[in-house]
Image (cartoon, rainbow, N blue to C red):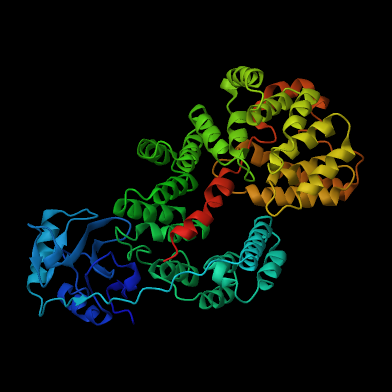
Amino acid sequence: MALLPGLAAAGTARAADAPPGPGWVLEPSAERAVRAALRTDEALSGQPLNATIARDRVLVRLGSEEAPTLLVTLVRADDAPEGAPRAAGVALLAEPGPAPEAEVAALMERLAAAPQPIPWAPAPVDAPPPPPQPATPADDAATEAVREELSAARHAMRIGDVAEAERRLRALPEDAARVARMDIALLWRQLGDVAAARSALAAVEDPGPAEQATAALIREGADTPGDPVALATAETACRFTGVVDTLHELGRPDRAAEAARRLRTLDPDCRFAWELEIQALVAARAPDQAVALAEQALERFPDDADMAAAAAAAFQSGDELAKAVPLLERSGRARLGKPGALRPLLGAMVRDVPNRDAYRAELQRRVATAPDDDVARFLLAVIRHYENDFAGSQALLEQVEDALDVEDRLHVYMAMNDFNMGNRDAALARLRRVAQRADPDPDIYYCLAEIERDTDRVAARDNLDRYAAMSQGDPLSNPGKEARIRRLQALLRECIADGRAECEGEWEHPRLRHQDANEGWVWGVGVAGGVVVLALLGWAWRGRRRSASGG
């Protein structure tokens, strides 16, 4: 229905989203009565008054969205707890707050003078949906193909290859929206093609309230006024986590954090909302808030591996690496077998210089006492790489190569061990092979640039540019390394222009050419020093959140 002045959003959710049992809702025709009762076109206490209908309630805000003076909920009077103030067929609940007495009294006085009660209607009852049909192997293959293409398109966008990303999106089958839902439209929006994004949204069948809210952000942009999760209720809050995801993807982690906070307030058991708020606070560079929330989350969800990963990102943003490492080991072991599971752990360990001796000793103990612990062998191999024991590192990595093949970082270290031992061709062959994976580790491109800086400088330049594009803006990356990468990008362009014999600069490899210098920065800057944690942890959860927010 059309929006009326002062009413930020409208519409009623589908009955399928209703809690079990009979209920009452505000139908579209009730919008005018809500506006009249609240007089949303008039200020209250000298401040603008806004209201949002959310199916079985009305969210009323006095003041700005960023710092409201009053934020309360109106529900059907007969459904409210005893003692809640009542007028015009509604009762006022002092949630989510704030709800100062003076403003509540002024609002109730306005409602008491309403020309007529706000009309409620019984919630419609839909026929039960038909039972789902079992998926066939062909269905599964088609679904997986769409997801792989989306992953490849997303990767192309991350490395700055817009043409390739657009090509892959255009090549998707006509029914891809059945699997991808909002993801195709979101990618088009991120690529800057708003018309294509809107066209993709039109292909999504039967979107529920949460998907409608997501679609509004994709269609109009992340700066669209109003509360993007206003339609969420305690029962449906977790379905709206895709809205938060979309705000973050569209470059508004501040709004994403606020929306996630609203959702976990509505449903404190929605762990996705906690994860997303922590993640958004990290991206918004609010480490103190992220750490404080992470500590609360760990108390509430002590055994959740994904929450451990989110909390670890918060501790890393606050430079509390010693707290992050055990959490990342727990989450990495839980995700073992999935690409990139151990990558955040490696980055945190490498950067945690004060505890390097303790890590080495503990890993040596584990390797000696637990011969089947592939993770311990891998981590000890990384330490030996940074200590310039390339042969010792390679011997350990060869023992776990089959078990940890999906881990791109294993191939990075094996390649750079080869390069440092003079096996340049073997190093290049390995890196080029893993670079063909759907979403390769950014350090693959960095290492290719290192190896080819004097043999194929154009390829080295392009690979370093890809690496920079993927790591740019990461709130957990090492600022010193980012500055060094920019200098190396400029250096490669100079070397291409003047054709000098050696493009010597601040390269990390071969490590022993600067053995004395290495001693000071081996652990602080190495290949894994600027891990792009949010690219992995943050949005590797997209599939889980999308499934949680299908309505």
